[in-house]
Length: 603
Image 1 (tube, rainbow, N blue to C red):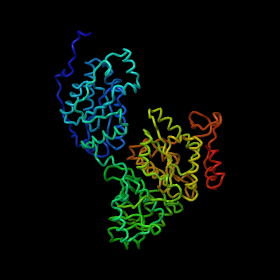
Image 2: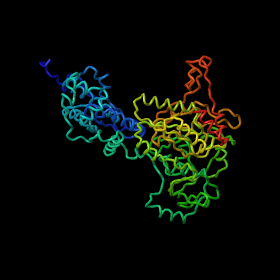
Image 3: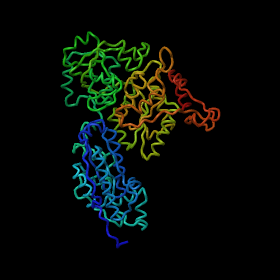
Image 4: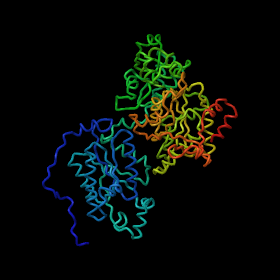
């Protein structure tokens, strides 16, 4: 076949065609592509040897950008050869045509306003330069990224076994073995994947996109803490000593902890009226993109305190005589309690425990920027579990987690919970994740009187890990400081988004999350499946994939917990025994030795 002429791929074979201009401009398209506005179309061209890490980085960056509401699509070499380029082989001519087609497709994606990531060996300088030229002619940014791993590193990885076959002569013309790879001379970025972690590579690539104004700087500010910097603390404390003070409740202090640690990012303090109205009516913050925020985080004040502080530009917040924060530029607005309750809870029942507190609180709300002096501590022997979002992110990074699946609970772990968490880990491993880490994240703020106390829940969680029901090596147990509002599907969005801030990218939703029986009728206040359904539709939760609740039961035939599939099995056939956690809660509430005995029965 050596006598065949090389096919010219740069020829315009069709002559009776005229390029048609779009009616929609890129800037106009950028207003509706994604939720952040602005045209961000570009191509990131990943090039390197087979096994260098192009696909891993490409998909990881795609996941990262999409989770931050930046539209992105990753084109992978193997995937493209299953479809668009399945008629091409690996001759020099076919490789050239392969790259030309990909460059044209990438240009279309970029022109549509997406960040297009291509993961192709693309070994020849001329082909890569042609790809760049295609974008330059179209006026689109093109970033060449050299994924640089030494040949010996790529061979040691050799997941597909291709290097072994090439060395054995079973594959001819394999790049790096008997076909040259021409290293980029002036790429926009070099990623040394033999030395850097995947997360490090993601960060370097995202930094490049920030420098080129593709990714807005504020988008990747993950956690907005409200603590006073150490070098300014003395000055702020001096201010606090001369400012008027407002006495706050323990519930208020819990919300200050939530705000100061960054769980409610991007809030800078208790909600002002504009934020309060957005949350109450739309379930989102709308200034700066669509940000899910389903519950008001507000500071009630009395009429007397409002009149006393109305003209102040700042005042201190004081709990049991100790100043904990300053509120700057405060704004006072009416606390329309009945309307708030009707919208937040879907009921105004005065026997609802949190609604009762709302109705008994102040008639005004104070919103403003917070400066918090130090971390809130409760000195209850559990503070070491109260990890902030930044600390959780750092811990997961140290553990080299590539998937973080979070599970919130306000009750002891029962066997159904355990099975769901075990199954989630199994499914993540099957999807190709190497190190999925469970964030077991019990709620640690205010709860109603008949819920199991936090200290006993933490003992039970420890027993679950000690018994090996959950993998202690790949589980983080931490306390989520938020109070419990029992607001059902409205509140579960808050629970989910807070874990997103902490770095979770999978969230397990339980049955009737954040629900409770109606105080008067004793029926479920919320339909038990609505929480999970709402999460799959909620705006602004792009970083997370929702893992829905599945009914678990004890299968007497298998003599083990199993997921109950009513479509497949009949109860009498498999003799399922559906377990209730009611008895467990009663045991745990007794705070006696029988509590821990029951823990072992359950696990």
